[in-house]
Structure formats: structure tokens, C-alpha cells
Amino acid sequence: MSADLTPMSIKNNAVRPPSFWRRFGLQFGIWSVGIVMWLTFVAVAPGAFTHKAIYLAFAASTPQFALMAIPLTLIVITGEIDLSFTSIMALSTCAFSESANNGINVWLSLLIGIAAGCACGWFNGFLVTKFSIPSLVITIGTQFLFLGIDMTWTNGSGVAFTDSKYNTIAKLFVGTSFLGIPNPFWWTVVAAGALWFVLNRTKFGAHIFLTGDNKTSAQLMGVNVKRVKIATFVIMGAFSAIAGLVASLQISYFFPTVGSGFLLYAIAAVFLGGTSVFGGTGSITGSFVGAFIIGAIQAGIVASGVSAFYTNIFFGVVIVVSVLLQAIISRRVKN
Image (cartoon, rainbow, N blue to C red; front, side, top):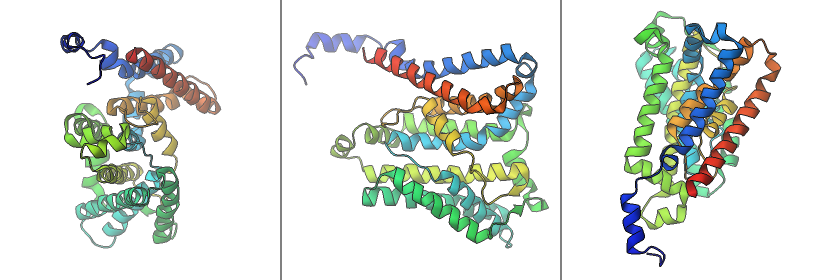
């Protein structure tokens, strides 16, 4: 114990509850950005943003990259990054479609697709941890590798999901059920809830934070850092497979390049949600909200009658302002 921690200071810290800023500072920042942006769109385009149709559109389209942003949060908290998940999304969906179209039961094909995603994730984690190569470099390479396998396997041709054997699985993943809201939204809520629990209420979640905060200290405390990192990449692979299936079933067609436009959206959602690029800090709920902010920006620009060319400008402003706000709040928390 350091010399400045006197018994009185320990007692004071024990009885004083954490301040509001310490407990909810970063979450308050991201929610504030989201609320201000929503009010802006309501004021500029009330006809669109006061009608439920646009929110149902969010619920159907945003999960396509939100389902990848949520597990990506775990990887970034460990201090790593994955840039190959869109290629995993394509390759695992390819494995699903090829299995189903070759006479394998569609539900078994689903498991094969998810297993392919997990295998890709394991391969990423193994290379990163075994050879101590920066994940940024490794996953750039595997992004090309996985996509190349996908394109070679399919010969660059897509596969239609119009056969009746896909009806049940399509209804489950992309149909409309509870409260008339598209099922992709509910799958995203389930994913966020499950990974929030894992991150905040389990030993594995604590090890994720410890690994990202200080790898050496985590190892001294008995944490198997390599196993933790590999596990987060495997989780990323599994969710990428599900995201690829959702995106393909929504249009009843599998394109070998499915997910190619979601990379920056998913990454932006993670950092917009308050996860630190340096590791050790992150929020599943922040990434969840961040993903829907990204989705709302796209629709809001169009609904407001502004040229779509301004979308990237708006993305940049919102993300920069959000990051600055989070930095200010973090300083206040430390003080």
C-alpha cells in the first residue's frame, strides 16, 4: 500500500459512493451525442423522424454492422483490432450456402457457417498471439486471404436463397415478430445483452479488461492473455457469420462480397461508443448506441434533403465531437 493511503483516506473512500461521472461518464457522453443528433434530425426533417417507418428501417438495416461492432468491442478492449471480419462474414456465409445447396440440412449448414467463422477467428487470434505480430497487420492479410478463398470457392458467383428450405430460417433471422419490429433488431439486442453480461459479470470479462489495461500485470495475476485474446477473435468470427447470414437472408441472395461496405461503420460504432483505441476501456452499450447513431446519420442526411455527399462529413464531425467529449469526461472522472 502506498504511503499516501492513510487509514482515514481508506475509510473515506470506502463510505463515499462513486460519483455520477465515475459510474456513467462515458455512457452519458455517447447518449448525449445520440439525443442531440436525433433532436436535430427531428427539427430538420419532422415528417420522416416522427414516423415509425424510419425507425423500422433502422431496426432492419443497422444490425448488419451492429452485430459485428458489438463483439469487436471485446477485441479492442484487449488492445487488438480485427480488420478481417467482413471477409469472415462473406466466407462463413459461403460455407452455409454451399452446404445447404449440396443437400446438407439447412440448420446443420447454419452450424457449419458459424463454425467456419469461429475457425477464421481462431486463425486470426493464433497468428496474433503465437507470433506477436500486430493484429492490424495480420488481419489486413487475412482479410484478403478469407475473401480470396470465398471468391475462389464460389467462382465469383452468388447464390439465391429463394428455395422453400430457407423459409423457416429466414423467418427466424429476418422476419418480423414482437411489436412488429424486424427480428434483426431483436437479435442485436440479444447479442448486446449476452456480451454485456460476459464482459461485466464474468471472470472472462474481467480478464479481457485486465489484458487490455496491462498485459504484464494480467499475466502476473494468472491470466492466460493468449487464450483470452484468441477467445475474443473466435467470438468475433461467430458473430460475423451470423451477420453475414442476416445480410444475405434480408435480400434472399448471397453475394461473395457481402459485408464489404460495413468495415468502417462497425469500427466507427465501437470508437463512437467510448471504447479506447489503447485498450482496457470499453462499453458494449456504447457500441450498441454508436451503431444506431451511424445508421441514423445515413437516413437523416437523406431525409433532410441534403446531398448524400455530405454523409461522410457528418460522420467525421459526429465522431470527432464524440471522442473529444469522451476525453473531457475522462479527465473529469480522473480528477
